[in-house]
Image (cartoon, rainbow, N blue to C red; front, side, top):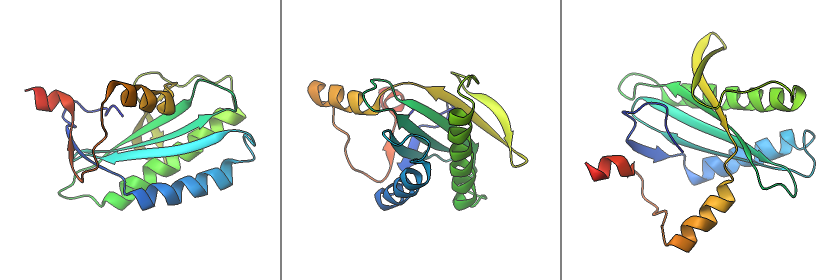
Length: 157
């Protein structure tokens, strides 16, 4: 996941149980949009932004459409649950819009939009997470389980 803000280096993944719960709700509620497709979510919490991704992969498709939502967040003064809920609501609404209006274009790089009277940032990509994970496994790259992560660019400094 590539954060919108360059300052977003240290991050925490959404808790596994939280991801499982949201995935279950998304797949149950969105199944009618794509009965044979697969939906998934992911997210990270940075000190200045919450990043949420909702993805759909059609059956027998190599591409995966992922809608990313970035919400500004100040860990020192904001409630992370409010930012999380906003990002999840926005991502879900955009996924429904994507299915109902397939000809509408989504930005391929971060672009601001107003959602529920709040500025959020969105973008779309078609990277297949499963293929990326398989490639990482072949290359021997691990995804260590730890609570706080530091992006590679920060480790190189």
